[in-house]
Length: 532
Image (cartoon, rainbow, N blue to C red; front, side, top):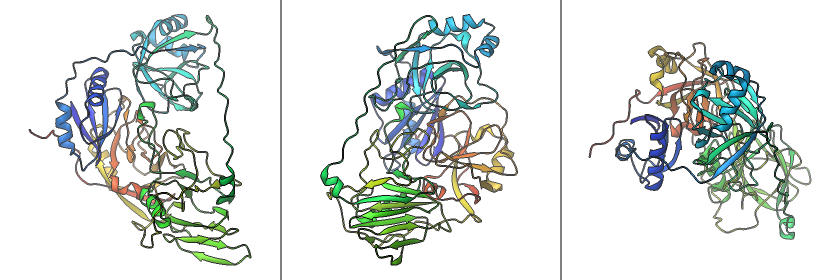
């Protein structure tokens, strides 16, 4: 085993092959090491997130290194049948790459029995192993920007099915009408680790689609109808419901999401006396306006935006961020554009009445999991339950000075886990030049631009492996992407460094066109297991 640093709370275990990875994953699930919070298995790595107060990277490495990897995972007794229309855009290319006829490619794919090794990339995307070795083909040289939902594809030793429309570089050999990700199912992902999978050819066997489950819309109770609510008057950019995050769903390929600035999110709840994990609205770039029905208290934190309160008689007063704001029925609240920062958090006393999805009210913009974005004319209900409420807080303040678009932001980074995939010049360039945040950035990640690309040692392909929030992933262009909360669980490009956990909130507040300087807190080095 090789132990590689990812962040201050995450490490990557590199193993010989997929079988060792799955054996280690099964061992740690059956007999957990104290302090482990989450694990993401991949092609030949296991990413482990841990609680720093409960263990250290060196102690964790020692405990993991002692595990027996000789055991093989018993296959599941659950088998899934996937109907395929074999007419994919890359079917002829796959035939050419393998030296087989198109008919032979289809026959070998249909006659293979696959196993779901792990899930990642997107919710419901299972990495399938066990296919015919003759069908192993490389990824496309140029990834497509749009692959249809249901695309059945090959890459290296894996086969897979894209659960939703997305970019991707796998070789498409067909399309299935089967729904791979469906929140009306339990669990939503059709593929679960360990499941056996067989494909069949729709040209030879008919497919009977399952009837969709009827949608049920719960009517609001009389009490809810009379409670406090907000009507959205303006939302230049849709606001998003967010909480602390969606945890425990990595087995289905779902990342944590959650508020990008966790400190501001928690402070907004303390301002109004809520439990710190209550649902808030995350508002990007201001311009958001709501009218209130009923008497309540709100708090707005994060980017220092101007706040205007207009009452039913038209009188206007200004309010402050990080302070409780009392509202009467008929009041209108408008957030102006903040001169610094990027995101504001609006909390209401009692919390927003939002149904959780997979245990969280966070909206994941990549996975499309969670409540719908909040746009104009939306009506937002406030919870009537007052259990757990505390006194409002008058002592909240920003944790840092918010950056402006013309400023340089310094982010501390942990070098690794793939720093050794880069030349010394590439490593030096990471910390010696400024990177501009481009307008193509979002909650998935900050797309960066710099004069000098980060230079890799070669163009070798990295087998998919887990990625952490804050990871600085470097595609072949050498222009990096800094992953934020909605990033995919796994990625196929090397990560040169990862933003230190204590600077993630700051990263979530960097505005477009600001510049970032990365500051390594230590040289890259493998983690050495602690001695007994």
